[in-house]
Image (cartoon, rainbow, N blue to C red; front, side):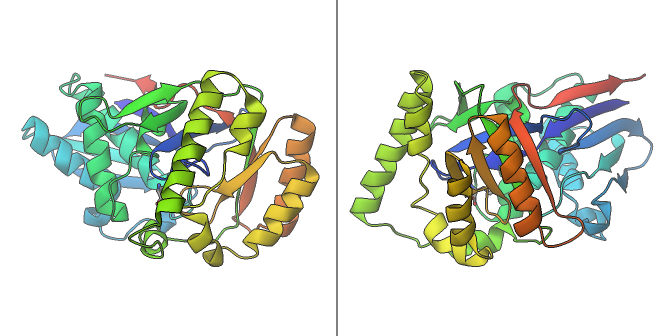
Length: 313
Ligand code: HSE
């Protein structure tokens, strides 16, 4: 039996739509922000769901991402064997925290280990992107790449080298808050225009190059100042209750950058000290969380990505 954990992730990072993402982990050890998948060989295919958000998973196993991942993987490696997958769903679905990516990554990493690593890192990441496309309606690696490989990842236009690790600011705290409501990636992508003006394209290129330059030259303030989402936020903010008001309030508290995590409705705030991060978490819990299941966590970048939690023969 192989058990793998894959962390939650923030796609887009406010700048770098579809091409920049980060994996995150709560600073308190016991807080769970990622799915676990356990897999063993079995005579017949079996899928068991458990975890805090397992009730939200599709009723038919054929609509479950873990099954989709298994189907594609088994085709790719041409195996006739069967498996029993247990998916511990700890991330809310359609939350903007890379929930589907976490399930895809943990399933594929566990399968690859169980079958003695038939696919290399690039082939596995490519497969992850394919499944993510099937689920969200558009190919994007900004959740699967960080959840799999850890850190802040830049997606580059190279089939053999899909993502690159870029340096990140160790002193940044990433406060995330999920209000407890759903927003599907498909819906959130549909509100985006098909074309952007020349002015927007140039400005966005400046913002992303500024962020990458600042990350490599360790200029925290410059990096934070380039976190401006002019691609998705102007169109998606109407799907998020009081987005602009929260943005103003959080800035006043001391946040250095703020944005929609993935396709929302989770929002994130970056702080350069723990005291402010705590204040912002408190603000989110009081003003943004709408249901009992909603939450807010203070996180750091997860430099590891997917990891094996246990192997038993
Ligand atoms: N980059 C993707 C989007 C992430 O914003 O649609 C989805 O989680």
